[in-house]
Amino acid sequence: MLRIAVPNKGSLSGPAAEMLHEAGYQQRRESKELRIVDPTNEVEFFYLRPRDIAIYVASGQLDIGLTGRDLLIDSGADAEEILPLGFARSTFRYASKPGTVTGLADLAGKTVATSYEGIVAGHLAEHGIDASVVHLDGAVETAIQLGVAQVIADVVETGTSLRNAGLEVVGEPIMQSEAVVIRRTGADGDDPKVQQFLRRLQGVLVARTYVMMDYDCRVEQLEKAVALTPGLESPTVSPLHNEGWVAVRAMVPAKEAQRIMDDLYDIGARAILTTAIHACRL
Image (cartoon, helix red, strand yellow):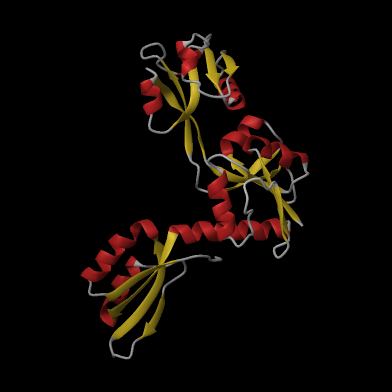
């Protein structure tokens, strides 16, 4: 039975459970449940603190886990990313009072406060910057005001929290993070149970990214239509009862669907429909 670690709370928890549900796996009904068994799919889920998941997976006690790339790197655990999941995206940046730090080199000799000591220490070492790192569990924006550090390193989304604290971002992003699937470094990459699990999640990712588009067009416009909707291998084309017309079906990127519908209409296609894809295998 495959043993999988899932975040039990925080921004990763809800989207992870939703993705697993879409992939056909049973999920817990109560937030207090720490373990459930899905006998149909031969999977056992363990709901753990997101920061601990990489450590459990690296120990070999669990086969794979869903966590953040930032948490994986920060843990220093002997585990590796095997599939990005496209949610819980975040950007890590340095920040300081305006005019005090202009670039990465200016961090030398300064103290940096962060909740992600492993990430920051590794980034500074990678760039040969000799700076001190202070670990704080949260609210790192106040570290500069209280004199604990001259610089902070934290997740930056809109930058509003930094501006409210009188700070500005410094230099290039430290890293880009998102939810990922991880396994122990060196684990068997051909394990059929793991491969099946990854295929299911990849199917969800594709289903979320594409829609199915159906439309009718005249035969003489078919090549132009197919150029707009090439599909993954090629579209399905079927003759209609009315001579000279065909029905076309193809997967198209969801974010481009409206533009494609407009372009198809302009070349004479009609009865243009899009439908959501709930699951797929490619």
